[in-house]
Length: 68
Figure (cartoon, rainbow, N blue to C red):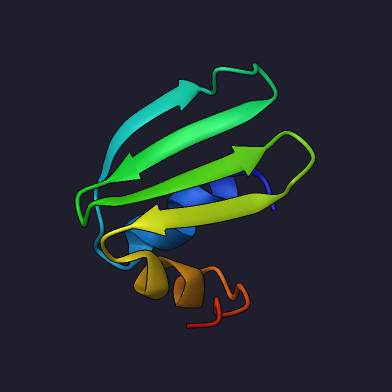
């Protein structure tokens, strides 16, 4: 999944994008949302979600739930 699709899906759920920048390695994007969630999207399509609201974002993006 690419960065624009991630933004579209999350924004459509009413969660505002508050930041978008290239990550420190230069191989993907770091996104932040008004819920407090942070999403890392690699140029290859790998996605990682952390922070407040991460479970909600993961569900929106149809990502596997983290154990715990």
